[in-house]
Each structure stands twice: as C-alpha cells, then as structure tokens.
Figure 1 (cartoon, helix red, strand yellow):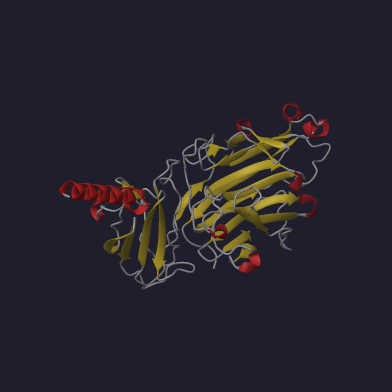
Figure 2 (cartoon, helix red, strand yellow; figure 1 turned 90 degrees about the horizontal axis):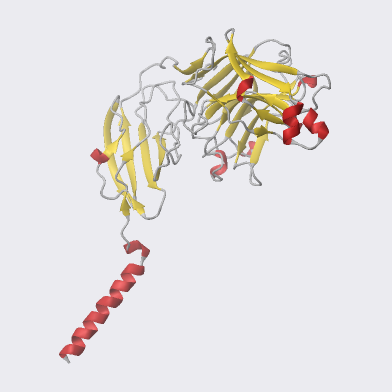
Length: 398
C-alpha cells in the first residue's frame, strides 16, 4: 500500500506538471531587458503634441524592436496645446511577441525618460506591458514661438547628405526610372531633372512606343537608401517653394512617405502616405493632393483632392509657388501660396476614419506615369526646381 501511495503521488505530480507545461499562461516568458522610449518633449502652448508612435523600430533607424510604443495625451489635444493647462503623456509599451514581457522591470531600467518640464513620472505594469504616466508642468499663459525643426535652402554645390539621400533607383509608374545622375544642387536650387531616354527604355520594355517614351528622372528623400531615417516627423507644418514641371506627362511631387503605411489597421491612423502636391494635368492647369493607406496592394485605400485649381493661382505659369501642409491631430490642410485648396478632417465623408499619428519622411520627386497623361512628341528634357523646404512645429496660418 505504501508503494502504491508513492506511485499515485508521483503520477499525480507528473500529470499536473504536464498540464502546467501545456498551459501557455504558465510558460516562462523572456523579459525585455533593454528598454528605451522615444523622446517625449514637454508640451508648449500653441505647439503640436507628440504623435502616437507605434513603429516597431528605434528612432531614426531601421533596427527593429521587441515592442511598440504608444503616446496619448490627457486632456485630449485637437490641434495644439492650450495655455495654462497641465498635460499628462500616457506612454504604453507593448511586447510585439507573446513570449516577451516587461514584468520585472523597474522605472530606473527605462532609458530616455524626459526631465525638462516634468512634474512627476509613475510606472505601472499591466499584464506584460508597461504604462508610464508623465505629468508635465502647466503650460505658459501665451503661445510659444514657432520653431523651425527642418530646413534646406539648397545653397551649396551638392546635395546635403546629412539631410537627404537620392531615392533608390527604382522603375516608377511603368514608364520612368529614378536615377542618381538626375539630381543636382547649384545656383541656390535643387534640380530634379527628367529626360526622354529610349536607350534605358529599350532595357525596360519590348514595346517600342513605351521604350521611346521612357523617362529618366530625379528624386530625393530624407531616408537613406539603407533605411536609416535622416529626418522624420508627424504633426507639423511642411512647406516647399517649387517651380513644378509644366510638361504634360511629367509627374512632379512633394510628399510625405509613411514607413508604416503597409500596416492595415485603424484606417490610416498607423500610417498614411500624404501627397502635398502632385502634377497630373498641366494643359488644364490642374493638380492633386492625396492620402493613401493600407499598403499598395488590393487592400489599398486612397482619397484625392482631384482636379484642384484655385481661380487666382496658376501653378504652371513657370514661376515658383509655395506648397504647404498643416498636419494636426484632427485634420490635414493643403495650401498653395497661402490659400487653402483642400481640407481633410479625417471624418467618414473622406473615407478615412483617422489622421496618421506616426512620423513620415519627406520626398521630392519627378516621374512619369499614365496618371499624368501623354508626353509631347517633341519633348526631350526638363527639370523641377526647389528653392527651399521647411518644417515647423506648429501652424503658420490661422
């Protein structure tokens, strides 16, 4: 009987052990040791709030993390921070894999916590996640001055590679190719060239008509070819002074590209490509602004301003014009020379239920596609000129 009792106890323990091992909730999880949050700057009256960062890589790199970070503000910020208000940033860190956890981490283990203008910071572990509450000092009684957070006046003799890189040498829109040799800086301008290149076209297509109309063109961006982010930003005011191409069939653009645009959730909140201006119908003096989200496959969604034209401004008059975007938590506003030509509030009537709350990088490009119309038979070459690009931390127009 004694031996039977011992065998029973052993078998019971073995069964319990097997059941425990088979239960996912009882498996040991890997503690995330290295924890560093994105910088969370102190609120300033009149300035835009911190974005919701939910990108799975470290700031300014293409190095993936084991967790995402979300930043939300209390009270909610519709446009910019109010005066005389105490704001709290709620920072949530969530493991991206079910076998990872933040359990066991203390507040002193977290790098990157802000100190300027901070009243208090507390930490709570919720399941495998961390929630930080960062309470800031009351904002000032008047709006802060606007800050220029990115700019380039193209005053040198070459592209500033601390701010820009040539875009990858990709084929574009089925009838053009980005090439490094079509980008130059001189005389105070960025020159993005474009020219008919039938030799290159013959390499790309067996269709003689398409090959003879193939376009070699220039493009730059604030992300390096290896993925490193030279500059990216979310809410803010973006503007560029550009002399756009007026050749029909050439597609000139000033736009913001989202690294997370392919994430198909929340109708654009996690990532949206924002086209501030793109030319597509110079004979009728029309242009376009657009929002694209949910990737570029069958799930892609988009909304356009289409056939935009302000009655007193002709952007194809051969002169420079200032194109701008005011991107806030509640809406996008698109401008030409200080006049609004499209306004998108993120509501249902624009088929986009949310404003992008992740940072984008900047692109200036020329290309050619069916969307932009037929190329004139006598066309040889041309260029798009950019005088400057500027990004501010708050609106420039009321």
